[in-house]
Length: 400
Image 1: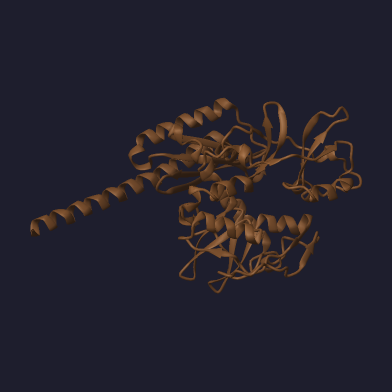
Image 2: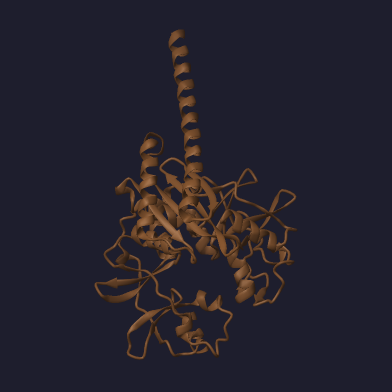
């Protein structure tokens, strides 16, 4: 049940550090807590934000010379009485997989993305199939491609994971996190096989390599062999496999061919959507830094989407639109394009579109137009199928 309350699944308790502490003194402490986050306090004992292990790993600053305050950030908060679907919504919109949990005005602990997915997967929602949430026909990379080429693919299509193939055979997976681990930290390589049940050992440790990512081959960074699932696996099964191997994605295989990919984000988004179903249709925004959007602009975009839905309600039914906005391409004369990616999940299918323009509003309109064309094509296909079915029925009646 996605009505599960936050109080049933969050991690109670937390550790604190002061903002004047050097990062070097808190590294060991943050490794010992789960989720890996510390509450930061000022000299008066007031909470100023949160420090996470991920933010430390991504920093190139000298831990001896850098204070906790430098890497402290605010994170969204949620109440113990809220549902996990609301927690998922906040995570999707903020792009931060961690929330602070309050009971009234008192901080109680944290809830992570994994906590939310685990709670959903252990209930009825977990019996849905992987095919319902996976990204079909994902963009692929080839084993001899350079990392620079894959980064361009990620930037163009807005993905964070890519299966790697060699002679049409799946040989690995490359993610943004793999690249971050090479540049900023250390990591044990995942090792296993499709359908395997053994634990993963390490195929070698990588530490903060100062390699030239532009010319480095994918083989130097990808995770291999790949852990995979099937389209007819349940979400519960897929999630447990992610937990077992401590990975953030599964390549979906069918008849020895790549059918799709499913990531933790793919699991989180429909949970967030479920929390909005009472409103029939929801619009959630994820806006990258550098793009300024007012609540009035978001409201105008929601109205455009509502108008679109009203025209095609017989086709789309209940669902949710996820709007991703980010800066795109090189800066030209002081300006930079904005890319809008739309992911429209309905009860029966998913639609994707993207567009670039000089303003967020224009990029959104172009992407919505492209999305509408897909819905129209789907509607025409459904009508054609319905007409064929009726024609066959009439023929059968005529034979009786």
